[in-house]
Length: 263
Figure: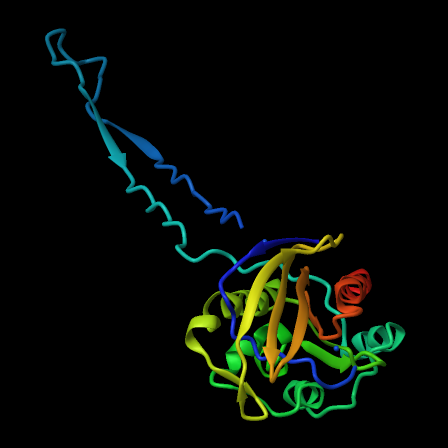
């Protein structure tokens, strides 16, 4: 895992408690103008007609039709094609297989608070790298979340037929990492927490987009390190964060890869 330094991020994370891409194909219709020529023949001939009778004249009148207007290409790009999406049952089976028991919390906020009790952030959107609030942002997409058996990691997965849903969630996490250090304040149990953020490049396979980061800080003299990865596979996206300094550097990429493989 390679890291590149970034500005300090005030990400709400603490580790004091146990177990963590159309081509708009504008149709260009070719309007065909059809020109119809009508011949009108006038005059007459007769055997008794004098030789000096004037010759009959032929008058040709050309009638044209007005070409159909050329359609203007739509300024709106077509929607992204639908992709296969997993159901809630599919995701529940995946979480169970990877040993992240699902269904234990009423929402992602409750899950995060169970691991980081007393965590407060002035802007909840800054917790997007944790997948916080994804269940209310994903519309009718399938959403499942849970902690690892040892509670050292949290995971949130959304699977939608529209890949733009997953792209939007990943973009929200990316935006949070880029701006929240300067706009949000974070505290743990009332104690202010300052976090230094480094973006990373997780070595995962089978993903369409990947976002990695580590956050280090100190709370009351106790240092902590958080490792997080957000990865998109088609219309599915997973956010996984670990807090255990002894295992997170290895476990978070491994667990994320397992989710990616299942998606």
